[in-house]
Amino acid sequence: MFNKNELINYERGDKAVKKLVVGLVLMLTLSLLAACGGGSGGGSQSASTPSSSPSTQQQQTQQPSSPAAQKPNYKFKLGHEANDTHVKHMTAEKFKEELEARSGGRMTVDIYPSRQLGTEAEMVQQVETGTLDFALISNGYMSSRSESMNGWFMPFMFENLSEAAEARQSEAAKQMMKDLEAQGLVGFDVFFAGNRHVLMKNTEVKTLDDLKGKKLRVPGSPVFQEFWNKIGAGPTPMPLPEVYTSLQTGVIDGIDVDLDALLSQKYYEISKYLILTNHITFPEVAIGSKIVFDKLDAEDQQIVREAMLAAVEWGVQKGIELESSRVEEAKSKGLTVTTLPDIAPFLQVAQEIHDAYAAKNAVIKAFIEQNK
Image 1 (cartoon, rainbow, N blue to C red):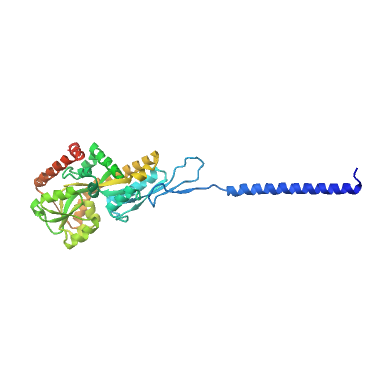
Image 2 (tube, rainbow, N blue to C red):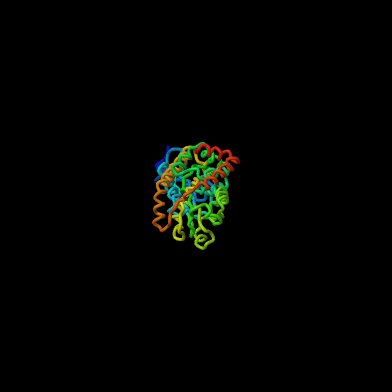
């Protein structure tokens, strides 16, 4: 039995132990609550990851979402050499619009006109290596990389842009796009800057003989050079940015040109005569990086392809719409606009070109036969 003092001490000790236990439990509870609260932060989190594409400007991010398979966002880059009034730039802007609409805002594209990313050769190389996602490149350059693309340059193949637009659906035209895959490029389709004509600084042209010995700026395609050599002119390849000064200073006498470039580059300021020949249709080629495209899942590949094809189709129709109005605009700028009364000598040269290219390339031969 405890005496009175021992009982009092025992009760005091029991209370102290109880207080100690309660204190320890309270401290443990507060620690657990603090740990849980710090982890939640009171809201949701979003993660941002670098793009899986090699393009330095392409961005891929993930938005906050509970589903495991969250679709990424993309910011692509597209380059071309024309200024912002050219149909090429209009088509690039249409691609941006279509891409954003079809992806629900997950995809967009920054557009770099006027050679901001380099020459056409440099841009195609960037597309090939995956550092540039898309480009709109003239067939003048693309035909120097892929022989079958010269099929589009067969002289006097099409009387107007509507006929050329229909030729895009031919099997040979589709094969031209497939041929680009071997170079690491995705060939989407072509649209048209317009048919080609002859712009002369001072020389009025009434017959083929009036062009003999005249220095004409032409694209880099071998077809243009062979055509004008057979005519007797002096074809002079040069980059687009050099043309205005060369014409102004007399380095060249004239230009093999489409009406879009004639007006957008303001060549009418230093020229007198425009001869409507419609001798060659000039495509622009919409390409993408195979490296970048192959890294997209099937759904996103379809979105990109459909957006580009929709933009190209819009560009085709825009070119057709503008072609006739541009003739009137050229007249309003002070140019004397004429046609050739006899194109038979030109057609004879054209047939020689057709025969030569059909003999050395099966796709070009098929393209000529499918679009007679």
